[in-house]
Length: 77
Image (cartoon, rainbow, N blue to C red; front, side):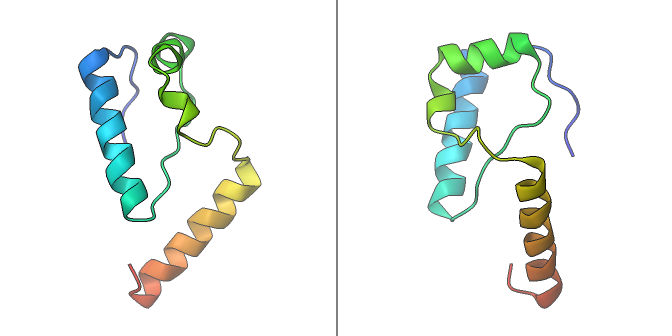
């Protein structure tokens, strides 16, 4: 788990974009949680949020985490 991020700049946006592309290439989704408005505005201004699914709900998240955990326990990941 990561600590809170209260500010973000262009180099960090680029790093997130790069990480997102790498994760997508491996079939892994990237999600954000509890993003403060200041950071959200920068991500939105950089057009990064158009490439990341913003519509996942809490039940979907829980279901995906359960599936991921099961895969880990079975040694599939």
